[in-house]
Length: 193
Image (cartoon, rainbow, N blue to C red; front, side):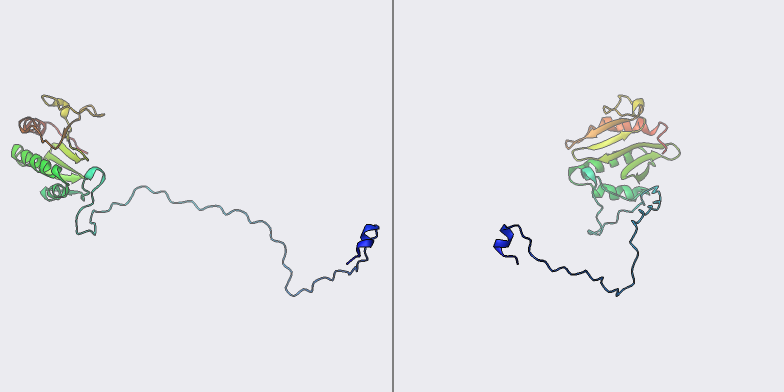
């Protein structure tokens, strides 16, 4: 350590200079690493469709309720899938759907039924589907696929020029008018997906 008086006088303290000895090589000398090139990502396969999964929830065998309380029911033809759909509808809308189903069955002898896209469809063999309905939070939406041909025309408009809707709320529906629409719709060429 230099003395204070030497530092003030401008004298530099004596330093011991030692030559730096090279470190002994204990391992093989590795060449400097060059920066790695970024890996080119492999092409990911194009996903064309989501695999279809049947609605078989583990919660006691009850169907899953989708947005608005619409039951998720596996696609199927016949009365059984439609009954399963109706049984899974929550609250007052279940009774409305039962009543609507009963009116359709009474009005159209030999009506064809199916559930597709979580929606019950009603049709006539060889003519296509004339009606379907879907469960929403506050109402049941009935779709008449050739609704513009019905007299009087159902009130709900659609982007599709021939489709008309009827929204059924908790207070029910006019059975006489709906029966008339069902009878008329069943005699028209239906929708064929």
